[in-house]
Every structure is written in C-alpha cells, then in structure tokens.
Image 1 (cartoon, helix red, strand yellow):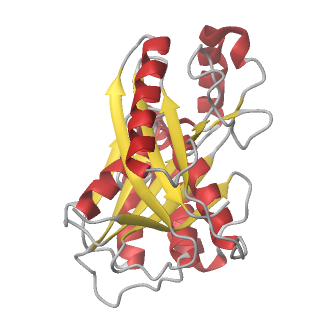
Image 2: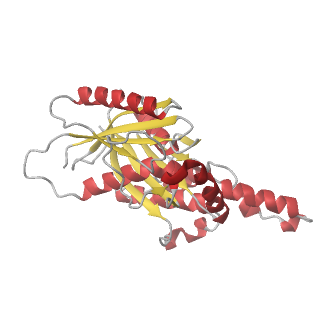
Image 3: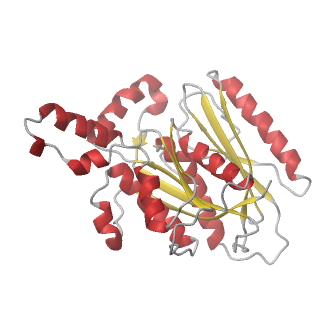
Length: 317
C-alpha cells in the first residue's frame, strides 16, 4: 500500500468572481457545476500543475456532493412540464442534469484520463470522496486524484433549507446556507514534489449510527487508534467538526470550525475545512525548530446517522 499526500487545496466561495479564461465553459454549467469546476481548477493551479497534453490514465477526479445538480434537474422538469413545443426546452439545462458534470468537465479541461467518479450522499459526501481518492492511490489504481466537493445553492434550495432547519430546533437558528466549492490534490508520496511541510493522509472511516452519543464514542475510539498509529512523536489529535452541530455530537471534544457564525455547506463542509488547512500549511514559513508531528481529524455527520472522518498528519504547527 502506498502513502498518500495532499499536495494543495483551494476553495471557491459564493460571490467570488469567475475565471475569465473559463467563461465559455462556465456558461453551460449550473451553480453546482461552476462551484466545483472553479474549485478544482484553483486547486490544480495551487499545486503548480499543468494540463496533460494527452489524457493521463493515472490521474483522476472524484466529486462529492449532497445535492449535486438538483437545481438543473428541477429547472428542466419545470420546463418540460410547461413546454408546448420543442423550442420551449433548453438543451443547456438538460446537459447539466447529471451529477457527474463536474468530474467530466474537469477531466476534459485538465487531461485527467483515469478514475472519474461522483458520490451523491449527504453531508459526508466530500469526505467520502477524499477517502475513496486516497484508497484509489494507496491501492495503485491512480497516482494523482483531484478531489472536489461542491454545493450549488439557488433560491428554491434556500427556501427548502429554511423549512428543513425548523426540524433542528434552536441550534439551527441563524445558520446560513452557503454555496461552496472546495478541492484538494491527492498524490502518491513517491511522485509528489511537495517537500515543504507535506500533509499526509493517515486514515479515514465511514459508518452509520443514528444515536449521536454512540456515534461520537465510535469516532473517539477510532481517533485513539489513529493516535496510537502515529506513535510517541505526535501530539493528541485536534478534532474539527466540519459544520454546525444540531445535536449532542462530539461536544467538548472539537477544535471548532473556521466559520463564525457557523455555516451549512452540506457535502462540501469536510473538504472545505481540509482545503483551508492544506493551503494555510503550504503558505507557512518553514520552522527553524524541530517540527512536531500533528494529527488533525475532520468529521462530518448527517443527523440521519451517516458519519465520515478523515485523519491527516503534518509536521507544521
């Protein structure tokens, strides 16, 4: 089994300007497509990578999302129901009604001719995509994988969210739904040129446990095993719950999120936090002292019971 490193990370927040050079391609995408596509391009650029002249079978892309192209699907359905003639339909909208649009567009744009997959599940989707990408590399099925997590938010989804969060009670009050794209570049350690404070993938876990306290206990038990694997040189793992807490899950055991107030990013939440940390570590000045090994654990959970967690290791503060 090969070791996996995270070479670079990048995000695309709602309201940020699109890349002028990608304008033609972006016109045919929905909000989900644009968020994921731009995040993927930014992560690829942050890694200092250039498009392959020919599709490379060892390089791939995996996308995770909760809703995917939901807005395109609903718009196409509405147009189809109201259409009186073929001209009333919109081929560009129909073309965006598949969840693998982001992975397909990035594969074409960047010459990624290997694995191409899309995971549409829940808030855990982004971390599921990262775990799958790491396993593809560790097992020799790929040398490099661009992992993308994205959620495109339109007015209908915001209205649905306002209804959905009523079921979460007071803890959901004030939580804002945010359109997000985030991406990280995973590579086999032996081919990576990221020698400056590399972030290494340690482990990932996926499971289903509807009871929040039992789910938390299972995560913490897994974290203990990760810490034991890291050895004496590592400090206790810093745990980040990558999104709002609507229930008694990991309370008192988390490092906290990067957002204040907390935002709901659905399936993009986990990769968003990781991409931020990977980018920050890459920007950090080299330490003059002997660096200490640090374990960071990122956790996402759906209230229905799905849990995903990823452990990363770095030698930077």
